Length: 271
Image (cartoon, rainbow, N blue to C red; front, side):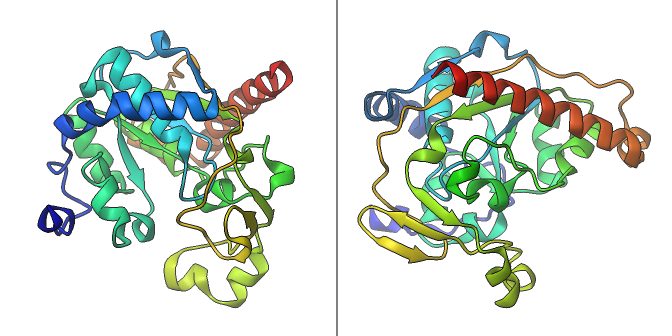
């Protein structure tokens, strides 16, 4: 058992996902997370057939409970083959213990090459463009989507000619409190150069209290989490030339972010 847990994984290989494991644990994750967070997932019926790029707002740092809520719901509603592969930050998914847990669930290094190979297999992929900016944004911005000007996901969708399927979450960033993302400290520590990390948050959590730096584990506050899958977004034109047109890429990014922010505003108002 321990030997399996400490198995060496290559974060660029696509054949390490364990669909049987996902099928077996999905009902338990679904039951526990739904009860604890009073979670709801709407709009599964909007997901199109074939390859697609799920784009979500990132929450709760490394814990990201909404990712597991969404994946378990999707597994139970549409089957394990519809559960997307996750494009993850190299540092996060390379970390010991985390890698052993999330690689068998479908996490791979975030790269256009890995996404291309998955789309060729007609798989779906999920990405959180905001990365550390979004996942560790201050509590006062919990109802804002912060992608930090990142548009690589747009270029990917255009180049691969796949739809973007927005997945918007409300409430998941209230499971603990980030007082400030401390971007200045991350720059001072040169973390952006060392590990491509742009923030080094000051947080308040259970049981750790006041801490500095990303937290890999904490006891989350049982905030109500609501997730909604929006209508897929199709772009025209697509292709390599479209992906290199900076003005067009910016227009597409603004379109996606506006749709997602409007949806989040509506969800927060209704909650």
